[in-house]
Amino acid sequence: MAAGDTHFYRPEDGHGLAHDPFNAIVGPRPIGWISTRSAEGIANLAPYSFFNAFSYTPPLIGFSSIGWKDTVANVEATGEFVWNLATRPLAEAMNLTSASKPATEDEFACSGLTPEPSRLVSAPRVGESPVNFECKLTQLIRLTGIDGQESQSWLVIGQVVGVHIDQKLLVDGVYDTAAAAPILRAGGPAAYAAITHDSMFSMTRPDDQQN
Image 1 (cartoon, rainbow, N blue to C red):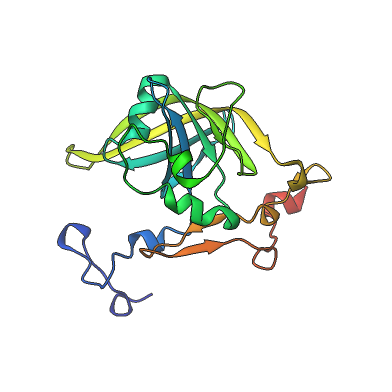
Image 2: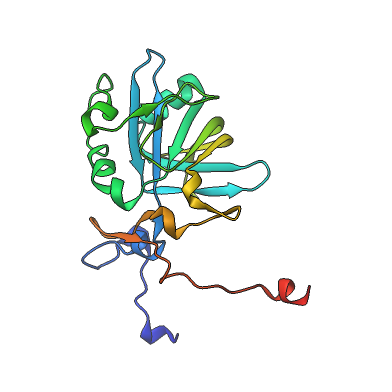
């Protein structure tokens, strides 16, 4: 678009809008619903807005925490965590786990969710969630700006070592994304998005069309 048709701003100067558009533009985003266990054995569960997958081989996922929170402290101490798929039926319970609580409180108990034992890591998984990734820490990075100054954000990257999938979501050996009813962060302070079969479409890459 022509320069006169765009709203341009330098983030360091402020966006000049009613709400910062950054989160809304980079979205919708899958939710990093992360469960951990502290070195003292206390379970923790919290959602993170900045989350995604970064590699097929090895399978790597990561989330970013603004500030050194209980989740990050637990991952550093134990080297383990579990990602749990946040779905529309679990949205309200997931939201409850976003509340700030002392490290001594168990968010599973506060939200009425079931802490199911994992197979390969000490962190529990959300029993009601249809998909869980058991992960082991590969990198814990404090993010910096172009000026080299450390930010308040920490990037946690883990390798998926175990996968749990509700068998009802597997149709002829293919995972049905829409059937899982995942929810995503949609940018606004309270905005979420959902994936449905009607909202999905198919498109093959040019290289695939030639084969």
